[in-house]
Length: 552
Image (cartoon, rainbow, N blue to C red):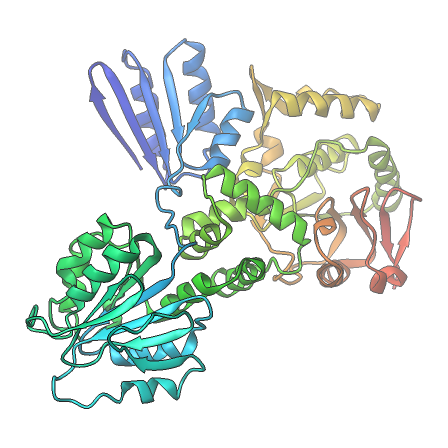
């Protein structure tokens, strides 16, 4: 989807997903106009295809002044690898909610909020927090909500008392017919006039607690028919207090929520499940945050990183925080769990694999000997490149098959669990730096061929020829969660299982075993070994070069 704006002889172009053929034609037409300069901003775009790369290259060669802007770090890095200057503008750090220092959670509501409050109290731990509840109740109604809530939680529940010191790990309820305020960490019960037809008034509590606790306060606006509380939400924002508004779809009494949402001052709109998760996160200690993050990523997004090497994930998390100017681990965990865009950015960092064209030429020579000896007369050769990353390994394999006169009878399946990097692999675009190393490695194979035969050569990058790219079947597959999908003669998986712990390696090697034909070959990276449980089922074919034959 492309939009453009003319401004003082310049052209600002904004490109969003999905990018279709019509958008590329419009972009081509705009770049051919005589504007003084162009700004092309890629918003929420993780990858661009070869046609856009060629367009940019052609017009930059004409010395046109083009500024590229992207809010995806992965795309920014991709542009730079291909020789384009691009500006990275993170949208994530604009949405970071500082939750590291929250001490007080204040829930305000009216009718229809009690069942949700009960769920929240029942399912949250409050070791490091205080939970305060302010609801509209009838002036003459005897308060028994403390007894109801106490039966659901180990945290102590009580009605607030005048002059009482506020303590962590406690749940306090505003008593009926009294306004609940705070003074220097102590409760104040007030007989002031009814406000917004209410006493206790949610608005008065919001104003008092926000003015004292400021950024250390989290307010949760619950359901209700009245307007009480809504008139102080903008004050919360000015005091740097945080605000969650209950998802209105979960409320029968919606006016309070509808009016709150109309102000657009909330940090999050959550259902009860996410409110509980958010409070749990705030309550966590530093030493338990990492495990909490991995558990919740699996529950919310279905990606299981728990069996990856922990140091790898921690390094990638640190890079993610640096990229987006996130100061604390708790803030990072919060934005990853509650912002899908942020999670995808983190996911892309975690799933980066090390790959290279014709890596370890001696290993490749041994592989060639085995392939020629075992499959010279085969009618159809099926190969799986598992964890293919950006595609260097799979393109290398195809070029080698071409040299062995086995190209036509081969089918290569290239998979990765990272859909963005799969698109890069499909593009088949590689930097000149990557290609220079590819040529050095290819020369060591001493084949009677020129690597330039397989690529279109540009100033700062190369593109794999179409007849090479179309031979490869790319699709998404997760070695951790997905099963076997075919029976292969050869499986190539380099520099992937090295990042898994023993439990996960066992699961992956079972997958490889189930996916190989009897007598088929598994080719691993130089630093990888067969999982001990499967060592008797594979025979090493070339000492030290990680080529294994399925024998049992």
